[in-house]
Length: 100
Image: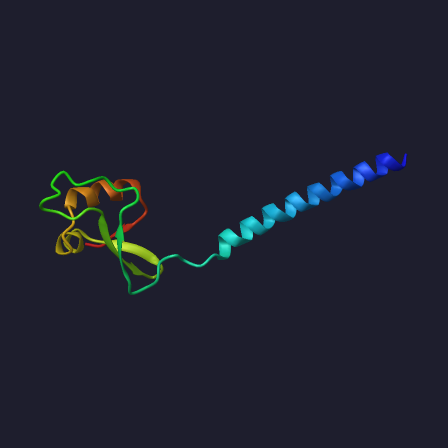
């Protein structure tokens, strides 16, 4: 009888620990700080396609952070030496906001 009670207590502790872990993970996602800071410029390489004209354009997508979100424009991309085709393909796959 004692072993059954100990087993049930152990199961209850594991269930509570898993529930607490899931709740803490959810809370962290809600309140985690932005990884981008306002006023900074960024070059996004991860998830972008390579340019077909490496002698003319730099690799990646050029963006800036405003309001905690990355933003970009075709003019900004070209001014920084980026390929506008790479930018357009990246925007189709991401949530980055295009400024006209």
